[in-house]
Image (tube, rainbow, N blue to C red; front, top):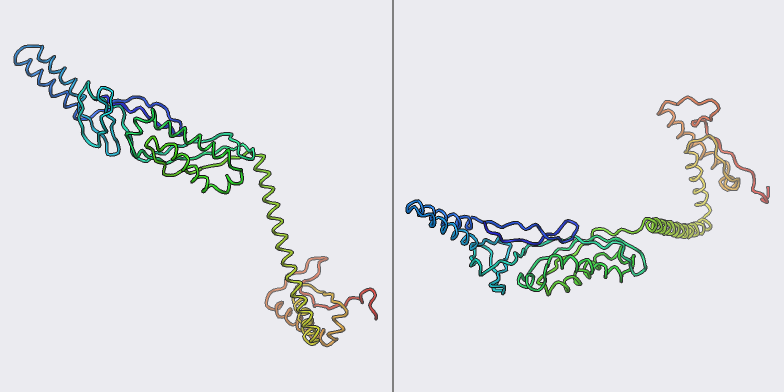
Length: 341
């Protein structure tokens, strides 16, 4: 079996750790070992010489390291006596055992790296915890293998330090409201640091921003106070608009007393339609409408109440409670204090 090693591994937390060195085997390596070994055994059986079997096994053990297979997304870094000679793959390629070595296998697929900044102070001295995810790929395997010792770990640390740098010169308000701008700025900063290593950053996404619980309560109270202030402002503006409309209505009624009397009768009628046995109206309204107008409005309201009562069964009246369907009465109130008559 071939023993090409893959020394890189990224954990779920974004911390890069050395991967357990697992041999990379392939079918050609097994055939390269089995062919010479079988030929040596066959020769030893025919000639009766054990040396033929030993030689065949030795040739097979050396030949098994010659064939290599790189996956479609991989590139192999090949060294000749320690000097870089080129990239190989994807597919099958051959090396000379003892002369060439495969130093590393570079994965050119998109890689996701989670990183975080804990208890980092913003520009307004607020400690925050920020979690983010980095999406990147290796566009130049030669640089990734030769310019940096461990490009995965280097990308992880570059992302974390860039995040701390961005948080340190950003206020809490900008951090919470301007995530898109911060993500673009963070992507540009990380990409600038990793480009010499043959790494291209596609995007950075901030997953969560955690602030202290006491500050969360204070921000919640501030937001609630702002909403109450806005509600009161809207209510005041509505009152101003209503007052202006009442002013226009008063001018119209002042020029047309008949319209004012009709409006009074309509108000009285609408009030008498509601449930209840008594309605108190100002004496000035009764005087302006006249007895005939008041009685007409009362009669119309009583007629409508009687029709509604006939349409549904009357519920029994509770002891000590007024009957809601009792005949309606209009009681003029006393003259206002200071009024004549």
